Length: 477
Ligand code: ARG
Image (tube, rainbow, N blue to C red; front, side, top):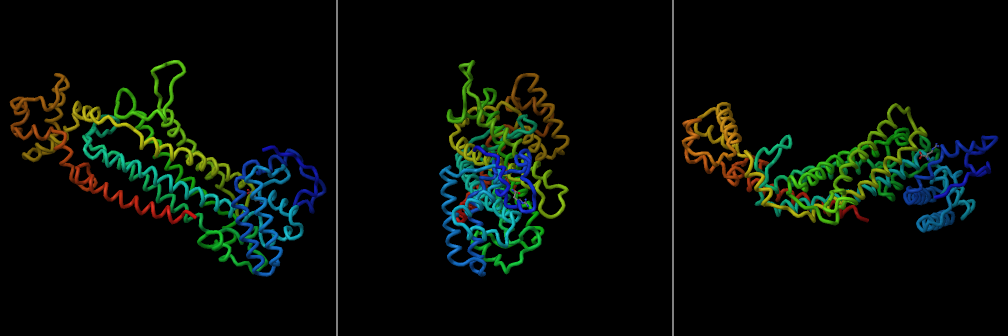
């Protein structure tokens, strides 16, 4: 977009009190039009609802309202087609649209700003924008949850080592591992849902800060725009950006969760792990090394976590210490919000599609579990069953592991006499204990990795996903 400086003093809505136009450099500093043009559809929706209400209370005639409504519709069309000419003196999208409206419909357009300030106007546009983005993120999250759940469901019988400190720890089902991500992303869903509720309080009607000198019908305007309620305090309405903070916070935490999934895919797709192959769709090659297949999509998703967190921190810092009510600092709020929305709209579908198209190598996973001491805890618990205290059992098994490492053997390779030499409590039942299936099957605690527990988790997840889908469907216009 090219912006022309405008030195015609009459071009400023607020020029009456001034003797000369602002310095060109200040115009550049002051203008947000280069980024807030993205609020245009929301600003126009807000203006139409405001104008309808003004006609209801007699500030506009029915004819004036209809001119305004048509004029705004035409402006929307021009902006959508890219025909709208923006200039620097417009300052922001609100002024640009209003000026154009006055060009188009004359005196009726000059009445639109009655009982309204850009302060309540911009907060309303931003809240509507955020509502729209959240609806899309909720849909994106359900697609990701569906992909995760599908892959988990198919991994009911696949055993791999679960890790702590990135060291093989205990055998788990692949379904169980993936369902951990289902839990994470379903919490994200709830977090965005709450942020959506925060964005459902309407600032419009607050005026500049004190309320307005007209009998405005805030409930009617709120209902038309899809808000749940008008704000209860006009000073708060003009200064509140908590809904944007809630949005950026939800996005920041989702960014963390996406980065963790991406990091696992990166590890798992390495030759060292070899647990998965990422589809060619989401990998790239090297310009020098012909053999390379790099998990760039995962790395970029992981990298976006920094940006999503920074955007939350950016708006937090911007708002901290601001006195009531509106301050021009707040004009910069949108930069963080737009950047986060753009990032999420890109990475959520990529994460979902990449998950849906992964190829798992279940025999590599199983081999990693077999060639580790992942059942050592189970052996200790087996000794506890024979009357040995857990601390003593832990020490005995630790010594056996040490012996195996020294001799290049696995626990299951140990002969019964060797075991009995460490503790008389050992018997032939030991050989069942070191079996991976049986180790998994014993994790019967609620939420554990035993197949029955995982089946219950899958069922519970499917029920919640259904409810989330219904929520998303109820949001689409
Ligand atoms: N462009 C401004 C913003 O984004 C709109 C509100 C301006 N209000 C004012 N009193 N100057 O915050």
